[in-house]
Length: 272
Image (tube, rainbow, N blue to C red):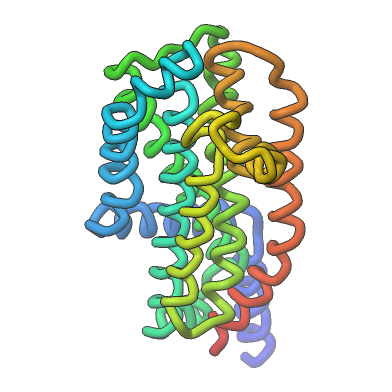
């Protein structure tokens, strides 16, 4: 009888760590997260409504001035910037919700269930990617109504849509690492100060030449400016390889630096 129980436990345990269990549990938890975000007014605001309104506002207020200054439509800078801002803002909201799940004990309850341990973080990565993709599509559609167009073919268009996903997932890794190590949601929300500075001091907000000379190197090389310029080149044309390589380097570097702390913190938060 004891031997039968041991075999049952062994089979049950092995099923929890199998590849099929990882796929199934990740799918279920991804669906849970997406449903929760869809039902969250704050998430919808940060992901869809506010970015679209921001793009309309920027085009209305400064679009004509930038076009007179550069001779080109400001949408090729503001649309990529707003898509990136939407990705970052949604990641902050996701970090706040993650902190709440930890505080309410939901993560701990998942830990004691027969669920694959890696499915929690994997589902968040997939859900974040879906959220960013939908937000980017919404921004592009609004931009299209305002005059934004793709001029470099299908491959460049796909790459344009993928840049915010990679950039946003890298930022989400940072937010996750912060969220699982702090009990204060205000600290996670404080990251929005950083995203605001990145927006106002980027080449997507105003042209590089509009900034004082002493700060132009910082504006030109900060992560959001690099990503905006890469997306601009993918949509409008121009050298793209170097900019896209720098964007990938920024994103991969953030993931490498914060992935392990995020994983350790998520595991510790789930077991507490």
